[in-house]
Image 1 (cartoon, rainbow, N blue to C red):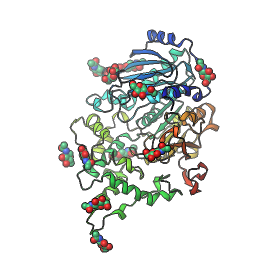
Image 2 (image 1 turned 90 degrees about the vertical axis):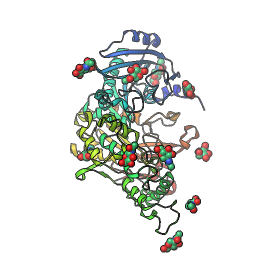
Image 3 (image 1 turned 30 degrees about the vertical axis):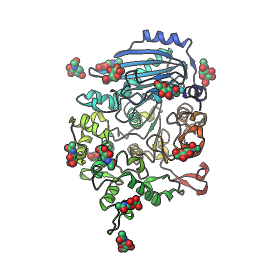
Image 4 (image 1 turned 120 degrees about the vertical axis):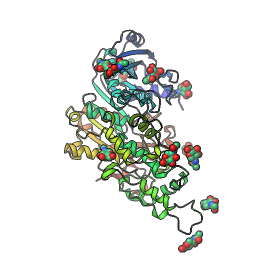
Length: 539
Ligand SMILES: *[C@@H]1O[C@H](CO)[C@@H](O)[C@H](O)[C@H]1NC(C)=O
Ligand SMILES: *[C@@H]1O[C@H](CO)[C@@H](O)[C@H](O)[C@H]1NC(C)=O
Ligand SMILES: *[C@@H]1O[C@H](CO)[C@@H](O)[C@H](O)[C@H]1NC(C)=O
Ligand SMILES: *[C@@H]1O[C@H](CO)[C@@H](O)[C@H](O)[C@H]1NC(C)=O
Ligand SMILES: *[C@@H]1O[C@H](CO)[C@@H](O)[C@H](O)[C@H]1NC(C)=O
Ligand SMILES: *[C@@H]1O[C@H](CO)[C@@H](O)[C@H](O)[C@H]1NC(C)=O
Ligand SMILES: *[C@@H]1O[C@H](CO)[C@@H](O)[C@H](O)[C@H]1NC(C)=O
Ligand SMILES: *[C@@H]1O[C@H](CO)[C@@H](O)[C@H](O)[C@H]1NC(C)=O
Ligand SMILES: *[C@@H]1O[C@H](CO)[C@@H](O)[C@H](O)[C@H]1NC(C)=O
Ligand SMILES: *[C@@H]1O[C@H](CO)[C@@H](O)[C@H](O)[C@H]1NC(C)=O
Ligand SMILES: *[C@@H]1O[C@H](CO)[C@@H](O)[C@H](O)[C@H]1NC(C)=O
């Protein structure tokens, strides 16, 4: 297989969607001149480097990401890499980068983060640059993958809740205009998970920032989500408790879920195209009372655990805290939320942002704790505003997606938000279509991966741009067309591609069109379930 640097560099011309091309002459000296002259309030320039296409950048020594997981990133195109520190208060700030392609389309793109992390998402920044965007990313106000930096510093929490992305975008736009000496034509956003929440936060509260956003698996209702992520531990108990299920038993549950629900969409292919229809009942797995060997059946306490995990989470006074985990993702969730260990983000968020108690015991989380977090709601991180009319009125477009096999954030929460917007704005789905479209991605795990046709341009996949060249196959390209060419280009479905063993070089396994909510996918021709034409979007 060709090395990453060559496929990625070669990708640039394929990816670029027609736009106002702006070619920087003598980019190397333009870039170094920029480093000597750029000034902006609250901004310290860390470095400015010209980076030729194909350069494999080492991130581990660069500092900001020494405590993050990514060691290197290939620059997809010739670009000017601008690294900044921006103070957001007298005790906090963001570390950010702008990747400014020498061949610029006039478009700008901000990227988000994940989990509780303070890690520039370089893969997304590079993906944006490969499309010819001036692409920016920030560390969300702290460094590293955990949330300990929140302790005793609400300004760091505020950066995380909204201010990092806001600042990154304001400063990023200023950098872009200054470097090219030209205005930005259109501004976009791409993010998933925490990044999905960040994008919705801007849509809700800063509707002027972006013309279009692609927001995936959003961590909306953030405090409640964090409580829900943590409520599995009290349900399962630790891994020595009789209420806990080892992964081998989750595998049995998974098979039973497929038995009860896989056929509901017309195809028994291991993928639940609409898990909201699956009202799973584990009782038939319960061990008979005379059983002597319980390794292949569930004990009564384990049946109860499974029932509770697949039930909506209610708090005091019967208020819904968060919808249930959707059935289907249990093989992966078994090692995460159901492991019998604290969910790290819940532990960090409660210890350092909500309770300021670094020794808080995650096993004690209950609906009182959840209600408290919801009432504290630091800097309105909940991100649940249902009135998006300011964004709509400015002509903004939202493409929202969620994998229906998400093992971390239940996909049941995304339709709940969509319906909340629909109710708040008194707009029917066909009226929301003018600016907000939500796609449910059957068989996709959290933001990517899974059994389904999960690659649709929501993130860079090595080599995929050679295969997924149309807007129908690539949601970022689709968003650009919708924003810049109007409603005739709005998506009615998005086509996902499943590669053999998730490896592009091994070829396409199958493709499937994913439906726009509230439509769902049904198979009309089960024998040919790998054929996109076998499927239909129905109400
Ligand atoms: C980039 O460099 C790192 C080591 O710093 C290496 O592990 C990685 O494979 C390289 N990537 C490419 C595409 O060459
Ligand atoms: C810039 O991109 C456009 C559109 O893809 C392409 O036609 C042109 O050759 C590129 N110019 C340079 C200098 O790479
Ligand atoms: C994050 O790391 C960068 C680079 O090492 C450093 O400049 C910055 O001060 C760090 N930020 C925080 C909040 O510690
Ligand atoms: C600079 O930071 C201060 C807070 O420390 C803020 O009040 C001010 O608005 C910032 N200036 C700009 C241009 O962002
Ligand atoms: C930081 O700013 C706050 C106001 O936002 C002020 O109350 C505080 O005294 C300042 N601290 C320092 C060390 O300047
Ligand atoms: C239980 O969890 C502990 C960590 O708390 C781990 O070391 C141990 O291997 C786990 N045991 C099983 C059976 O999963
Ligand atoms: C348990 O009882 C059922 C019928 O009540 C019987 O068929 C089965 O063989 C018994 N199993 C054991 C392990 O005794
Ligand atoms: C229980 O059944 C499993 C699966 O059939 C088997 O592997 C295991 O050895 C049995 N355990 C005992 C104690 O008989
Ligand atoms: C945490 O709480 C659980 C449940 O109350 C308890 O069993 C456990 O011992 C506690 N752990 C620690 C480290 O205190
Ligand atoms: C969050 O949970 C509280 C109960 O703890 C509930 O009153 C509130 O409506 C929930 N918010 C959302 C957005 O679900
Ligand atoms: C795909 O992965 C499976 C399991 O790892 C392996 O058995 C199979 O040979 C792989 N297929 C190809 C075409 O590489």
